[in-house]
Each structure stands twice: as structure tokens, then as C-alpha cells.
Image (cartoon, rainbow, N blue to C red):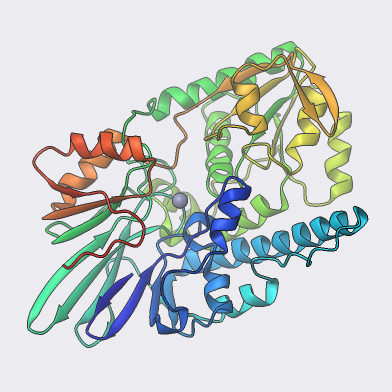
Length: 445
Ligand code: ZN
């Protein structure tokens, strides 16, 4: 939260994700009065950045939320889905508690669909990249490409108070350069302060082109063995990127023109529709495709599966198909059905293309479990397991350092990273003034 000239501005309002303890942390007080906040500037539509906006609205926020047009569309999809899941999970827990005869007070959802709708009604002006928006006298915000997901931005605040002025740049999540879909991150230079993420501040990613070749090899060798390729995918960005990469593989003759691909995720399908409505967000080669009346996310063998019955029908396919389904870490969703059906087949492959947290089903399989439990059944792992790391939507250490060099801040505040990673990244910023804030800490700019 930034305070300047009597206004209070929040950058993002995200949800902790991962486990039950973090769920409880989400319900804690914000540390400020929601009704005192005048503006929320949203960097992008991932839940860990926008997921508590409905709670903010529920607790009295009446200000304006400003973001890009694409982030606004994606936030609508993501927040309504999160609210519905919250309601469903709470009523499931309460049903179970009642069945146990518990007389404790019923648990309440963190927020409901009506709260999400309230939050959505607070979205006001939309931001165009690089065009300043005046928030109040002496306060301007400008959105810059962050290259992370559709509509993502780094946000600079130009602040003036009592005859002094400072600029602060919030990185949001920073993507990788040189990707086919998203434009490169392009932070403005010469900032007084920078608040930056450092998720992968201690490691390097495998180059993208090698990861793409690895994916093509995994698909062709699995089809030669007569199996299916299961790709657990997150609905936002990763799914669309994999579709674009598969399409490119067909165009280059690396993959068969008759290949059958099933995107078995209503959420990912809706997100893909939103991607198609925002050609203004893409890198030039992808924009050119749109301009030529094509779209980068469709090809003849691609099928969108929304209905549960159609999803179940995929169980009858024993080989020759690529099936993409959520969730990415296999903690829920339709992918668990496909894993139950394919994990024990040695002709099949499971291809992981994203981060998998400790304790998730995806992580167990990646770490080499000989068998796993799915829907209460023991399923032996005989399929080939591939982990392809180059598709990350987050910049690695060298990309973060390059971003920081361009932003040229006088002071750097590191956020959004595990503590050891943050410390490692801070030490690679030799010569810079670096702060590692703890929650609730206040700085005078
Ligand atoms: Zn993100």
C-alpha cells in the first residue's frame, strides 16, 4: 500500500495458495481499513495477485480498481470461479461436519459469488500500456508490459507531495523475453524505488527452444508406442502457450497433421476465448497471425471439451491423443481421471510443464513414486514421466537481473519469493541498495 497526498493506493490484493494454514491466513485482517483504500492497481489476473479483491469488497472497499482490459476480462473469469469453489468447498465441509454430528458453528466461505460481483463492479478505468492515468492531483500511474501472462503489467507510480516527487515501479510478475506469445518485459528506467518479485531469483531456466523440442520428442515417441500424452496444465497462459507450440510443431512438420489434441478444461477454454479477444497484448509474430485472419490457438485436430460426459468419453481412447486438463499440480480437476486411466500404461506419457509444489500429486509422480493413490485406488506408475521446465511464465535469475538493470532504481524492495531465494537474489544485486521487507513494515520514500 502506498500513501501519498492523502490517498491510499493498493497494488494487487492476492490470495495465499497452497494449504489449509494459508487458507486461514487469507481470512486474517488486512492490516489496513479496506474502506480507506481509494484505488487498487492490478498487475495481472493470477489468483495470488487478485484473489482477495472479493474479500476487500466484502469488508468495505468502495474505491476504483484499475487494470488492463485483458486483465479485467481474465479477473472476471478467475474471481467468479474462485468464489464458486469457495462456496462449494464450504458447503461440502459443513455437510461432512454435520454428518459427524459436530455441533460447532458452521464454517463460512472466505467470500461468495455476490462478493466477487461486488469487486467486479469496482473495476473502473482500463489502462493502456505506457499511457499515464491521473489518479489524483500529483498522483499518476502508468502500466508497462511485464511479459508474464495476457494483460500483465509492471506499474509505475509518479507521486508528488509537499513539493517533492518520487517514482516507484512495481514489477508485478516478470515474464521471460523472446517468447512467441507475449511481448518482452519493458520496464521504464530511472526509478527512485522498485518493488520487485524474485520467484526464481536463484536459478536458471532451460532455454525455451530446447523445451519445445523436448515436448515434440515426447509426443512423437509416445505415439510410436501407441499411448496417450497427458499434459496437466494451468488454465491461464500455460494451456494457450502449449496449444501455440503444438500448432507450430504441425506447421514445421515436427508433429503429425492428423494429431488429435483435447483441451479438457472449461476454464482453459474460456481463458482461450479471452486470449482471442485481446490481440493487442501479443508479440508481433502472433499479432500478425491474428491480422491474417488466423488464430494461434487452433488447428484441425484440436477439440475443446466442456461437458463432463464428453470428458468421460476420452477414457475410451487408449492411444494417439494428447489430453490437456487441469489442475496443473493434479490436486483436483479432470486430469486426475486421465491419470487414473493412463498412469499404469507403459505406452503412455505424462508431461509436466509447470511448477509442482511439495505434497501435490504432480510432485509425487515427478519425484518418482512407484504408485499413487487416486480416488482411493492404488495406481501403479508405468507411464513415462517427462518434466519440461522451460515453459515457466516467470523470469529466471539472469532475466530478473536484466530487468533490474533496465529499471535502474535507487532503492530495491524484494517481494514475492521464498526467503532463501530472496537472500540469494539480493546478494547477486551487488552495489544496489536492497531491502527485504517483512509483512507490515513501513518505509518512507
Ligand atoms: Zn503471476
